[in-house]
Image (cartoon, rainbow, N blue to C red; front, side, top):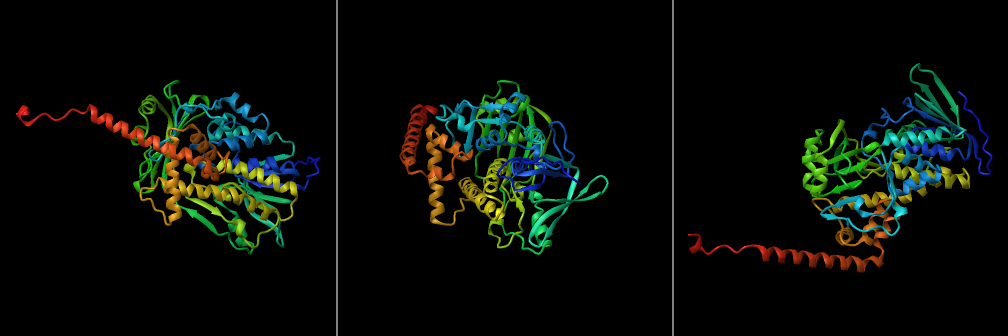
Length: 480
């Protein structure tokens, strides 16, 4: 099977043909980058790809809440000029004014400040929509590239190698079993959580990569909703009360729809799929105004559950031997706990890393890519572990350093309830605009100390007011 050739007129040209396995978000972003360096790019996908936004079998998690964080959207804008404007015109919900009233965020017992405005709203702008909606518009842009071809309805059988070099793939057409071999100067595995590369490596005589694993604390269910306009003023509601209590996310999406995701601790059984039960479960953790808005909502279709929530980081960066002309990215490289919703943004960062590595050339490409991506993957992995410890009901910290980090995190969260600067810093870190280390900036310590003092004074005043208005019990003689 041949692919349409479009000569790349660039000093960065590295070869004739690259193959991307998988047409999800990571695969689409990889194909866009590879189109700059190879004459032709083939994208192999087992599903039949629709010409309109819809859920597809190969993305079972696609019915749940998805969103690009701010940094991920910046990457989309860089790789696809005008795409964000296209999403907005097509119905995506745009939040770009920096008003904190657009958000409700609760982490543990701490609520982020809900009034004021970000100093740099452009850095934290969001375009919110469903996974099928965003993927469709992104796929349409990639299909428009003159040197990219999609081969949908095909399964990947095996890699083709010569010695330690991967130089092609064998694929099979699903509806008739027709087997085809594609030559390739580079093969990129973006097949998601199915993680085919470890088995491919083992069949070729390589060791499997070691894996970092983290068992997720939650199972979750998602329900699409129609909510009357104005019923909920926030565009994004995120709550993780901790202590073994259910948390979740409510996201405004395209065409006046919303998606509600409810996470329930894994030891508490299956999350409910009845909307009334979902609402009853989260009502104690949300402000009354949001709960009242949800009571006016109408479910669209049935709720769906998702159980494959363990986080796995395959440490290709630690392998002593790895074949040339093969890469792995997206969930196939590292699949984070989906309750944090970081996968698409990390895939966007990996696409930029891939472009930077290819600009230097293809020598030792895999080793350079895996090492570079391990930097921010490792930061995100560690930050997620820290977040889990903060909201853990058992506060299971194993060292003095972890206990100190947990105390500092709680102190910063407490101060952020009254300080817009700290709130903005949390938003910048969680949106991948700043690295997690920015939360440890010594310049923040006076704000954290002052914020905690203010919180303590406020609690004392509240207790004093309660005592002042509480009537004293009547004397026993009077009650008699």
